[in-house]
Length: 387
Image 1 (cartoon, helix red, strand yellow):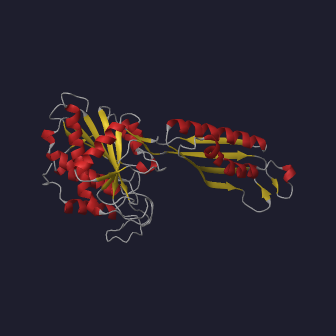
Image 2 (cartoon, rainbow, N blue to C red):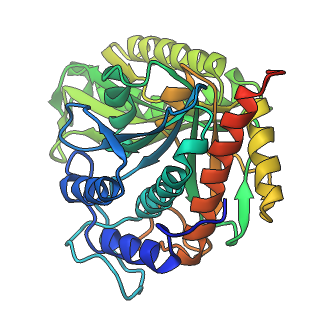
Image 3 (cartoon, one colour):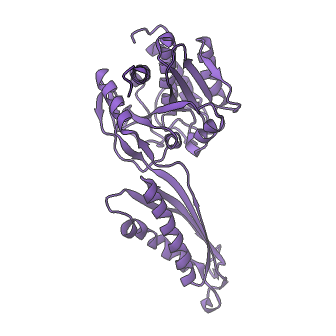
């Protein structure tokens, strides 16, 4: 794939910097949606009717028989005030592309236009997903609910990686991102004067015991070779210095890398909360909200993605484990796929006010994704047939 009549580095840079200047948070990606729609439509790319207020699904190919693959990016920004120092910094107060979704959107858009140039040669179809609401675990579910992805055989996606230099991709089979689950606990006791604890059923010692004890779920219930995190991030009880409160509240997050560990963590926490509360004479309301699943790359597809990358001159290294979650995992619960980390430098971590990417990675990433999809379609359509 050598034609770049649609896609030039300057075109991608201008598109990227415009998105970066005008970030939109989850469910508010109206301008971003229209900007992507306008450019795709100008190049004759077919857009499917999702019925959703934000986000787009484009379809390319279908002139030759073959499977359907999906290439996905996310578009939403974060409620973070930018302090990156780049000349195209956010112009929207308190909002920033601090997770690189502007890079994802631009690179995948470039790949879509490159694939459009090669449409007649594609052995099948690619659906390009410009997804809203990744940061709130919203977009994958609503895209799947449209019914437009029932025929997809495999999914592919990228994410910026500030720890990797431009020209390096992180690709690895197996679990690569965690299930980002959430829990909350409300403890109900009986309040009293602070000087008369004998008249109370004080929920605060129960809360303190739970904050400390929950760490034993990781240290004493989970396999020590299996990554897991339990973090209490918010605790609240009482309003003044001399009154024992009726209730106490705490919440936090659980991160696990496999479905079995996820089940074990939830049940272990549930039992700990109920028994600890009872031992202090309190009642407990325990709630556990499962969000996206652990993100597990298919072994064969990860190998194919890595081989394709090396063939294009990329350095490839196994991506590091992270306990961060990603709703791309929701697609992979239904079909196999591969999530690829793209080296974009910058040094500052994701979600940090100083986070920034190297735009020089845009065109190579777009070209890589287009080649990956075209080669995969050809591989799956080969007569001998395993793909």
